[in-house]
Length: 336
Image 1 (tube, rainbow, N blue to C red):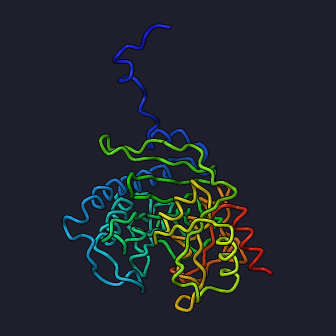
Image 2: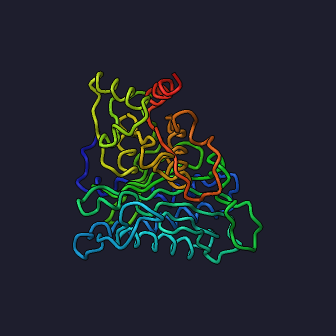
Image 3: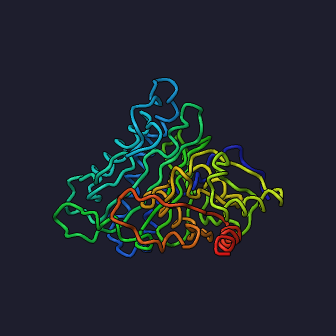
């Protein structure tokens, strides 16, 4: 074998870009005419801008509070507002999205693209309340093919089709590195952002969550408000010496468990008797990714993707999600 030339390393391929991957996989989409591919590119473009903004949040006071989060809840931060603007603008300019449902606004946002075939529901910056402390945050998104009449504005019914009607969903995690993870119903792929090249590269082509795990993620400060079945299950986890890990950002906590195995728990509490997480742009997309990765997402009794939406676009829901064996064990305790 001939010795390696010192310049051979420079010829090593850098990998598959998100752009190339989307083009290669486009034939798997039920309606492979390019619109959904463009939507994914638009989301990726906005996320690249947010990588820059998140990285300098402490330098320009962009993380300071500007008002309540969405309809109610903890203060929304300036960077969360920035994320909302960036994603809505990218989806508007891309031309394929006719309406956006954002955690940051109570009503649908009409993009003016009335011939667009898709609608997008998103939490622009999940976990932004922790930005002051340099904690990982994320963007969570869900895409539907509209059912309302083309040529006119989107309607609430376009977003209220149910979790099984999603054509794509995923999240972007802004942390020590930035990752975009998504599914179109044909498995889950993960992409890592290379800032020097300004590109997402395929780093995890077939993401699967371990069937079992030894990590549980929840806010134990709410312990005495948890339903009895949740306390019983968590007590079992502690007796098994499982590890507690909780960041307080759904995207960050879920992302870790996706790789290591484990369960994320957000039960109903006294303050949030119906659950706190939003069904359309948090629970549904995370559940879609989870099922495609071999995991399970339930509300306690029911699989999340089978829960019918109400007319409330910001409907809240409890969420138990992660490794299949752990989640089904919790579900059995809940049913007992």
